[in-house]
Image (cartoon, rainbow, N blue to C red; front, side, top):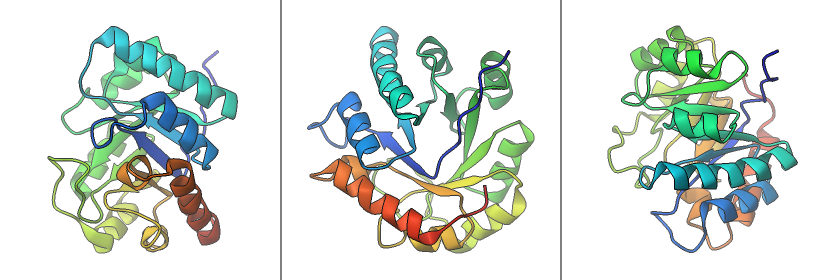
Length: 217
């Protein structure tokens, strides 16, 4: 029997140890969970595969105990080895159909999109959700596409049937507007990881999401 799929979640915190060096991936996971994140994504582009697996396993154990969804960015092999709940794949990452074949129907597969066509392609290839962005200008990702804004976010939401999680330059001040445009939730990096108190930062975002009510899921 396939494992039961966890919810995609509304507050995705992507852990990062390059934009900041005070907290490890594991520490950021604990702090994000303490602040109310319901999804944590392990994002690490460098390092040995063995080290990535060890870190992912520690993160996954914390998430499992808290009932939080745990995703791995890009590395399907690391996700499998760490028994993660799924993966998130960029446009130039591992192909979504192959990831689905390897992970099976019980795991989450998300895909990145910066245009309507890319969002449609992600959905057609079997993505469970689309990560659209950047919505606003961001410095967290060096190769990010130009900011699409709320109008493009709305068009993406209307173009696909699967949930849309918005990313890019999102914080407490603009998260509610993103949700009003139809996004299921938000994904953040620096808005939590680069703050003096990541748990408090996550808590503030969680309050905004709770106050905004339900979005399309």
